[in-house]
Length: 360
Ligand SMILES: Cc1cc2nc3c(=O)[nH]c(=O)nc-3n(C[C@H](O)[C@H](O)[C@H](O)COP(=O)(O)OP(=O)(O)OC[C@H]3O[C@@H](n4cnc5c(N)ncnc54)[C@H](O)[C@@H]3O)c2cc1C
Image 1 (cartoon, rainbow, N blue to C red):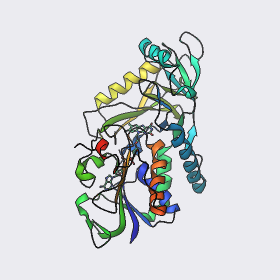
Image 2: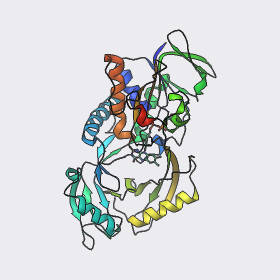
Image 3: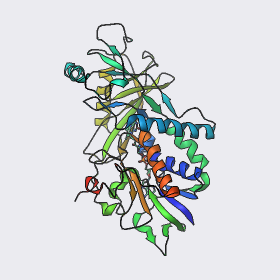
Image 4: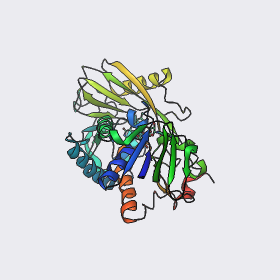
């Protein structure tokens, strides 16, 4: 009998699994190894200033500090380089209007502490391969999380505790005081079930009978190669070009609201090229393109908690564009709940915030 059966091995499931295992819990992870899971295509940016109005990301310092600590512990345990690294980032204004919004708000910004050197157009502050037409600023405290390496290393660590299959939600049943999950190879039993199923939560009937307000957003990204572009900074404009070594750069991501598929498209490729060309003016070649679905709630808040009518069914999701930033805090909340009976963070607790999360 497992203490917890975790369904989904993206960043949410994997960070939680590792923290539960460290707390001595006996866990099993079930995942159908989708190549296009959001965590497999994420760009990995952890950006302190987000949105068109240059707001500080929600509870940024608190979540970042915990993330730095937890990811450093994982890296040490895995004998790996840091998974989460502070990385220089340049934010360029899209146009004069955006530049004005920034300067209008700068006095009142709750994000001022993350604004470094200001960049002016027509100066030699940046390499000529970067289009600096309207100025911008250097972002302080921007980080990059290596999703792929973290998931691969964690996956091999849990190789005896991962089942590669899809679980149909109606194959999960309550027995006398425990939960039974039927898979192609028989039944598995757990005291609790934790759904970390990413965007598929929007189709999961266990999540309050699917009455949550989901707003799934497709994102396409690509890897380019350019020998002219410096490999020093991330260049960002909401869309980002991030150096990943050997003159290659990950470019991400588009936002497409009306298409819930993980298939890269010609339309996506066109959008990606437009965004790339608005940031750089040098030669580049697209090496590969991918697409994924961001598991986003209508109010852009992540959720976690226990199902009000089915004791032992837990859920953690809605990480939106900020999986790497939110996952450690949310996983820690769950572990403290299981080990010490602590209440969940009120702002995320689905039982306290149900009206905010639910359709009705
Ligand atoms: C193009 C793009 C760019 C992004 N860029 C960034 C970024 O720069 N920084 C950042 O922090 N975030 C970024 N994100 C967001 C980030 O990817 C997500 O917040 C995060 O990956 C969500 O993780 P998750 O574990 O909740 O879901 P997922 O990564 O989707 O994982 C869910 C897993 O559960 C499995 N699963 C679901 N249901 C079942 C079932 N019934 N049985 C078995 N397995 C199941 C799926 O196959 C999947 O492996 C980006 C997303 C996209 C799409």
